[in-house]
Length: 118
Image (cartoon, rainbow, N blue to C red; front, side):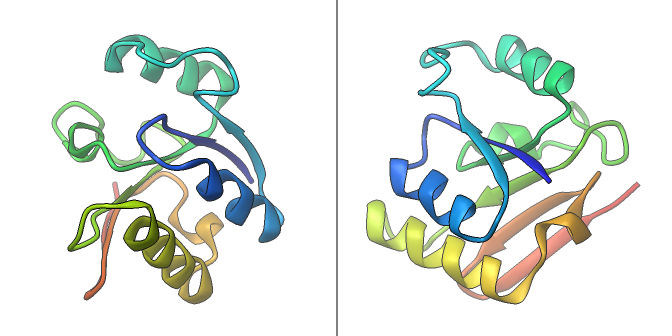
């Protein structure tokens, strides 16, 4: 599965996803830091990658309807900081194969995951 990690996530998120065997590139590594969401989204679509982000805007089904893209995983920890994000990502990866979320918008929090499909 091909994944793009948004710039709002720590570098460790890319490392963790690779540890789980995913084909991962990051916005930062590709020199796309600071890009506007529509421009970034266009590249994500061209590359046909599943987006992992903490940007709530990408979970808006009016702008990013499920079934029209490779998928989005929005990480919403209860606390700010690198550790809560990484802990939530690890918890999500432990319980879900991200391939099962393809084409959906999934919002992960410490209480579980909510998935919106087409």
